[in-house]
Image (cartoon, rainbow, N blue to C red; front, side, top):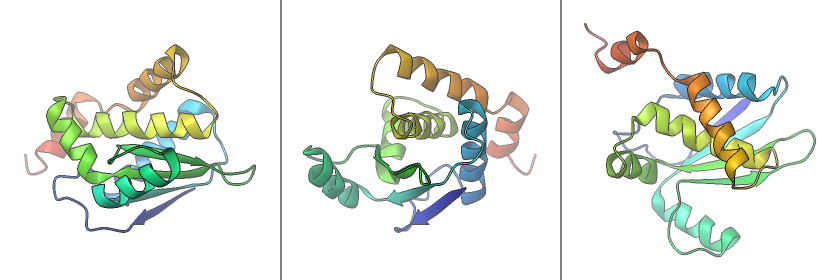
Amino acid sequence: MLHLDQTVPVDPRFPLSGPELMEIFEGLALTFGLAEWQLSLRIVDDREMAELNGQYMGCLGPTNVLSFPGDEDWLGDLVLSSETLVRECWLYNQDPHEYTVRLLAHGLLHLMGHDHGPEMEALTGLAVDSVRLDVDEAFRRLFPSV
């Protein structure tokens, strides 16, 4: 089960609602074989992300997603910066839904014990392909009144 904690007003350009995030996590749980999963997703702004990144990772400035592993009953906590996500979508010319899936899959893989490298990149790509919207659904989300 996903526990969503949205502590800041989300940037109006943030691409997804709570139910859409839940849909992504259900798809990722299926893709990665996590039948029973418990984790939290906290959506923050760049200021809070920079503080967390400095405190826990020793890095300066915000990042897109951070993972904090839990224990056997709690997979862990993900923290996503809505401002960084929106900015990176624009900078890298990424579809917001697909890029959100990519970041959340990346964070989830860290919670599952994976480190950066070819295996993690392949699993992230598999997750994006598995949770990707079909063309008709993407069109309906972009143009709901058509």
